[in-house]
Length: 450
Image 1 (tube, one colour):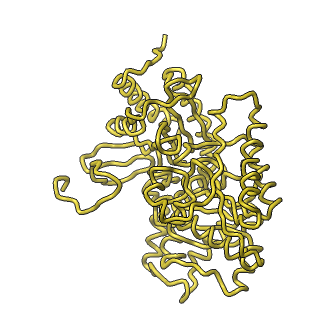
Image 2: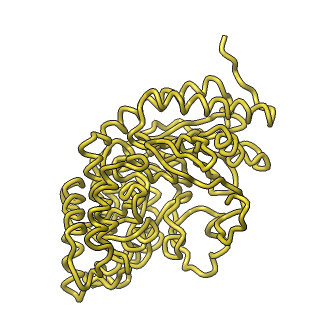
Image 3: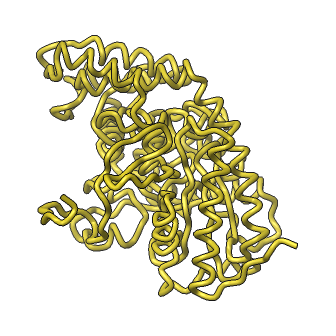
């Protein structure tokens, strides 16, 4: 089978073996080789692979119906999942709209924001400010909100060009400010941008509470989050949190925004929300936004598979596993263990310049010089090479270019929330071996233990 021609195409020609099965945090190819899923796929498989309770609940739904169009029938899985989602999110987020993925969730959030503005007689509000770098999806609307040059630039002429502000990458700053002051400085960039664009034209601000692929688990100073909320309230701008990657317990809370006690106006969810068992996502908003839109004639939006009963049965089972197995609490505990292990890497590898994250969404970044945070030479392709060396050794991690997509190298380590301390140790042994091999290949120093 492996030698048969393939008629599929994706991003590249990078060959991979056929997947045979998944068990917990492990994946196995058809040759029997085992891989630790150290990135939960693309930060998706929050509860691990092949959970028997989730599969049983999906099978029970399959035996009844796999599809019922939402305009023809209500379904118990979609109603029950909506109720469970509202139960697990902060007060004030009490209306749910289902989608099939993260890009759809982001676009749905923006379209809800726009339709709400129209009901309020604010038709001039149409600009959505986001951050650079950032990643919000690959469909055109989401891509226009994304700050990642290689993905966006080929299509730039086909998009409006939404305004951006700098992401709070304070670890690169060389000033005398405290972290609190830096957080306020970056938040106030949003205020300056709203004033520059014209407050009556700005609809929303879209941000990841903890950075995803484009900024590698970036966490802003605490002061940033409350100040952003204050600025949005000052100008009547809606705050949208993209929790596609961070939601569903990944950071040690159901929503990452809960770490700072900030409630956005709209939340986008996907990835860990369905945890890889079915294509699933959602937006969650307050009745104060949704009811006026419904009163004005309805939400002018929708997807064929929105609220699919099979996908929703999977999502409900996933949320039940998060609660019953205390996986959100485990993400917080194991996140501390993982962060301690990553700190030890900095002692051994001088080319690791920063590590960051929350819960089981962590990352480390390569640099040529820690004092200046100058990135490694882009021609080394470090972000690709370390991933390949780890993969060869049976560990899957995730990487991107850090500085807007053109240079810099960061690596996301985000295993399933079921991981144990012993499994973290197993993962780190492989990662150290891959780092040693990379350092030797390119001639970077390694500090050997005494």
